[in-house]
Amino acid sequence: MRSSNPVLNRLDDPSQLERQVLGVGGAESMTVDDVVVRTVGLLLLTGATAAVAWVVVPQAVWISAALAGTALAGLVLVLVISLRRITNPVVIAGYAVLQGLFLGVASRAFELVHPGIVVQAVVGTFAVFLGMALLYRARLIRATPRLARLVAGTLIGIVALSLVNLVAYLITGRRGLEVYSLTAEVGWLPYVFSVVAIIAGAFSFILDFDLVERSVRAGLPRRYAWFCAFGLLVGLIFLYWQILRLLSYLRR
Image (cartoon, rainbow, N blue to C red; front, side, top):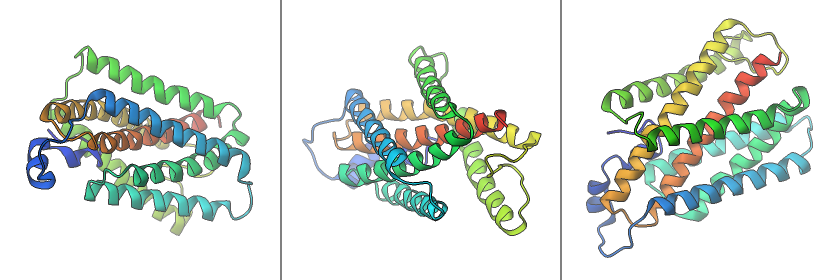
């Protein structure tokens, strides 16, 4: 079963990956605890970097260019780490630091316009994540092939439409599926788009949990826990931005 997460779907056939890519035996196998510890560590690193950026980086005129550069660098790292199956913790930590800079500066901009919104978005993100983890643990929601296709297709559509919407906005200045101003009025379509993105992001965790569990059963080496933790971090950051955007719409 494929994960809807573009990072974790690189591990969709763990046994085949171990045979063809690793080519080694006797490596200590990863566990779920290994993934949890590394995920928490990456979250702490991202949060600490965001806090420093929040305090240190000024809200200067050039900040938009800096944010764009950081976001682009983060996107490049996601693609490189995912496609090359990088398990080097230094590279993955570098992604966490870059995203922390982006999160800190951009979140501060949201907070200046809508006080209290960042705490709400953080609480909402972890509430959704923990809720999906509990549902998966209780087997109330199962990672079926149909769910995988639905969530993966929805997320791919969201990313593609977001890019098209951004290009259209830069060319025409018209707002469509997403509103980039922190104070502009919002129609009904951005609300629907944000809600759909949040739901898809939430259900993607079910597929990711299942993939991590199967990777552990397949006996992948412990270093692949870094790769799995990186994939979960990408999903959490995606969910945070979607919730933050929806909350900003509601606060207009």
